[in-house]
Image 1 (cartoon, rainbow, N blue to C red):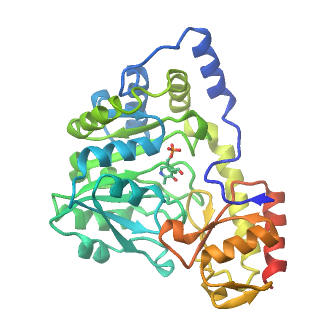
Image 2: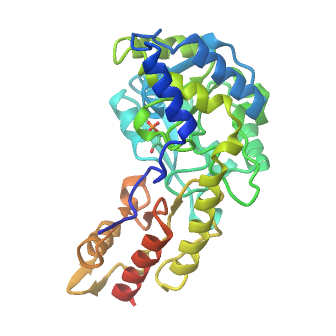
Image 3: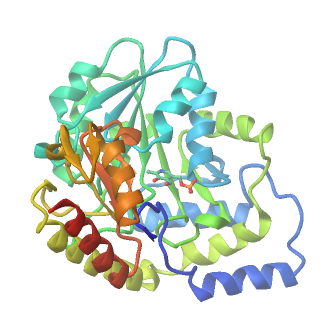
Length: 365
Ligand SMILES: Cc1ncc(COP(=O)(O)O)c(C=O)c1O
């Protein structure tokens, strides 16, 4: 079985980060921390935002949680009430709509087409906003598509949002550092300072630093939003793991060049998988994605066809066929609100990528 379904880097956590954790344990860092995170970590987060994103926050605007997911959960649970709407561009990361539903809110899914690079168009955003809209969730670079908004594209969305002061923005920047071809990452509050007070900027260590198991994510927002998130977290998990918080400080104070080797390898794999998948006629791809480590081809040309005695009606059927016959694991697009597509992760070795695509090719052509 070759797994191309993973949503996490296949690299080990960098040594300097692991060493910081070992030192923290030796130094007796084993107790509860403040619920929003240690002051040292929150200061490191503020320094990171200032250095890398031109965003000025103070530690009382920062919430450190047990992974990026908990910050999304905290923020939605603390703010969304029955009847509130949350705009979620599709393809979306699986958890957004479910968390909104858990809070009693209504996910408003805006379908973004492959032809538009899977990005929401300003006029579609405008059309989706109602008096009940609470949040827009903006994930760039995106899971599952790898699509990332340029500064100009971000500015065009910000222009719409400036006309609707009741809409808050959740900027999920967790793939910030995994970008290619010189892509110039920007976060929405950085591009439009007028949105600063109603934007929650979310980031974390899981993807960029290959620290998925450490469970550290951070949120920066107005004091009001940060305080509400803190209240939620105080009754769910309390502070994040104290050793992981010490390791996170080390990760954040080092320059991003320390993790460049992972991004460079991801880029080679991205180019490899695109080259190989382009040899399979039924896989429709857009321009190479600017970030993250996923390819999201449209595979709907297989729908209605029988392959190896199995009728392919949707992406789940195709994913199951690839799993059972080619022994390659992928994730059907239905999970991300795009039933015509398939998510293929290239967080796998070059050898496995070559082998997996060869198996897919011989099954489907
Ligand atoms: C877009 C996006 N946001 C947030 C998360 C959550 O990250 P964490 O593992 O830090 O909770 C993920 C993880 O897959 C993700 O893809």
